[in-house]
Length: 278
Image (cartoon, rainbow, N blue to C red):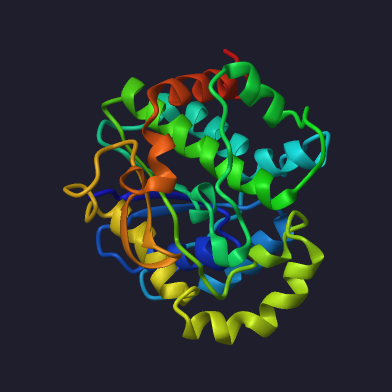
């Protein structure tokens, strides 16, 4: 079992709760917390000081990704920055290292949230145009759904090219207690509506609690998903956004993520951003 972990988005919500869960595992020796804001990093560190299993907390540097437009910002924050980090760390990763990318059911559509299944192209130029915002109109939820879809395709191909590592794209599902609704990409009407709708969505099984969302990451990190899912799989809810999980390629709305042509061209398009300079 792993002894050293790196958790991105660790200053709040699912990231911070994952840090707390990992810190309580007997095998854990060190956790690196990735945060974009030094102030938020300080608050997060203070919140875990004194926890059982936490012997020392040090603060290192933080960096905020910068994109030239709204579309690239969404892709940068939710995808590009993470795959750049994976590529930069790859020479230092031990064989069998587990990589868990935070996916979303939005990548195959969430009807109750009015998020349609994103339409994904079949050429690298199409993906580059999408990543750079070279298309008419701007729907932030569609862009978000696509960036999570691009991730599923990218890591499926990445897993094939890097068989000595284990990588899964895992959705935490619809989860309460996160700061996701505060993101600039979330439309204003969603931000206003969701706090009112949250109790109803929980009752309907659309939203589960922070512990349940985090548990999916922990299952992946600790090898509980190894027998059920091969490296490169996109793991998310079998129905809706909570409950039992499955490989999304088993679903009609997720079959496109088994398309090896889409995987290869998405990988090629993203490699423009993730190539590490030597």
